[in-house]
Length: 217
Image (cartoon, rainbow, N blue to C red; front, side, top):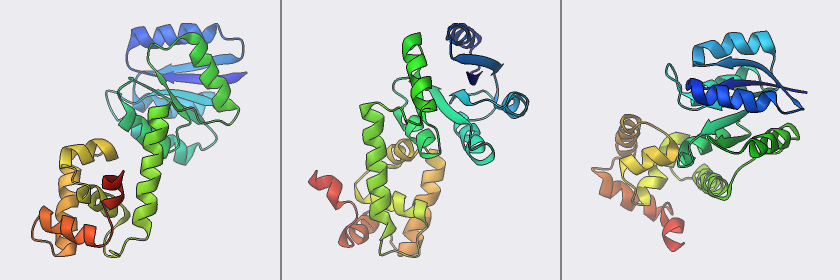
């Protein structure tokens, strides 16, 4: 039996998912939560094998809950519950340890398949999310050998995307950051590169090979 808890603040969806899980032979639904604050106590009391986690909770981002679970309970597998268009948040969750995702409203047979696959050690992604993960890996690999040692890892990510010509809003969506955080990073990057403006930063970055592979594709 796989011990599962459901974390979602929408009672109708949560109850419907719970009812579907209760009918699965290999699943033991051991708890439900509507907020991030409830997760700590629930996980400690029930010792689940898997958490079905909504990424949009009323008191805290599900992404933060996912990171906390990965750090404190690495043996507990997380599958995120999300909307079909929410690929950027899904990529961030998988990057931080989630084992896959389920689109809200999915058929119970699909939910059971995902649970079985994750418990067997697989990571369950569709083509779009897998492609986004591959692009993120390429971005990481490219910035590891960056000629800008004064920049942090995150600032290198930002500079690569600036060099690709992306605006702050697009960068925020791609890296799952707030626009304010991106603005702060951009200001730091410009200062560390001694660049007078964004255009100059693009020139400096492209001279060092950043932002060019994406254009070629």
